[in-house]
Image 1 (cartoon, rainbow, N blue to C red):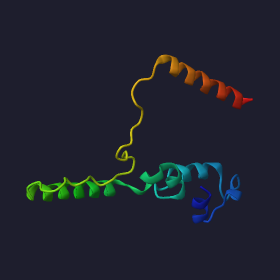
Image 2 (cartoon, rainbow, N blue to C red):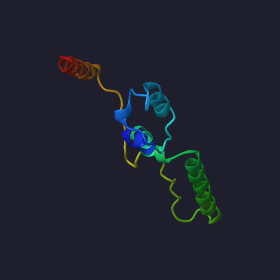
Image 3 (cartoon, one colour):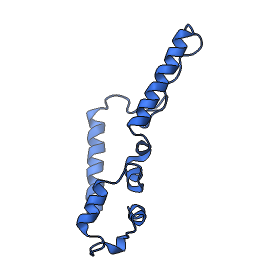
Image 4 (tube, rainbow, N blue to C red):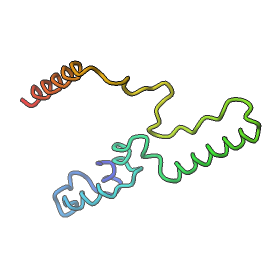
Length: 119
């Protein structure tokens, strides 16, 4: 956020003064572009992808598939353009259900850890 404020000629040192009220900071944060430093910090790699990038990736996928089909489907099928948030090949999230006793042990450990960090 500090970088975004500096880009506007403001500073966190100005916060709470007439130069940068808390209300102004709220408005700035609510409307920073997705490609701003704050937008990138919060959105990660998805900050670089807007509607145009997703549409272009879809067009490229369609063109590649169409050309592959017109070529008689020879060779390997074209790969889809990688998009932010897509799972990597071979990546799995979870492996199915876990026994309830294992879940209870995990849950109790997490609750105990949280209780210890609160003190």
